[in-house]
Length: 177
Image 1 (cartoon, one colour):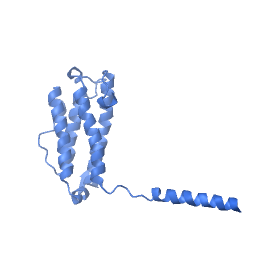
Image 2 (cartoon, rainbow, N blue to C red; image 1 turned 135 degrees about the vertical axis):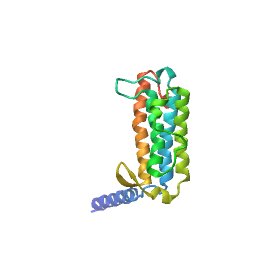
Image 3 (spheres, helix red, strand yellow; image 1 turned 30 degrees about the vertical axis):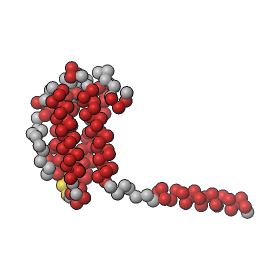
Image 4 (cartoon, helix red, strand yellow; image 1 turned 90 degrees about the vertical axis):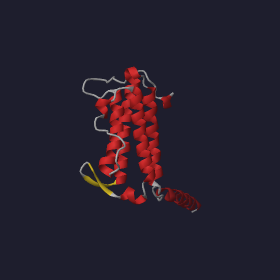
C-alpha cells in the first residue's frame, strides 16, 4: 500500500510542476519580443556587411543569383517597402532600384543600416492599436504585426544566404569569431 501511495505522490508532484509550465501564456509584450528578434538579425546583417571586403561585394555563387551587395540592398529595399506599401509608413528615400543602383561598400552599409534604423524607429513609435491595425500582405488580410513578422522572416532568410556568401569568400561572421 505504501508503494502505491509513493507512486501516487510522485505522480501528483510531477503534475503539479508541469501544469504551470504548460499553462504559461505567451509573452505579453509583443513589441519587446519582436524587437529582440529584429535586433539580433539587424546587428548581424550590418556587421557582416561591414566585415565583407569591398572586393567581394560583386561576387555571386553562380549566374542568375544576387551578388553580395545586391542581397544587402534587397534587404534595405524590403525594409522600406514593407513599411511603406503594407503599413503606410513613408520611406525616407527612394528604394525601388537599390539592388541595381548601389555597388560601393560604404554606400551599401550606410543604406542598409539606415533601413534598420527606419524599422526600429517606426516600431518604437507604434501604439498597440497600430500593431493590430488591418492591412494586406501578399493579397491576404492581416494585422500590421504580421507584416513585421514577415519582415524579420525575410531578413533571416537572406541573412543565412549572406553568411554562406561570406564563408564562401573566406570571411568568418564577426559574431562567430
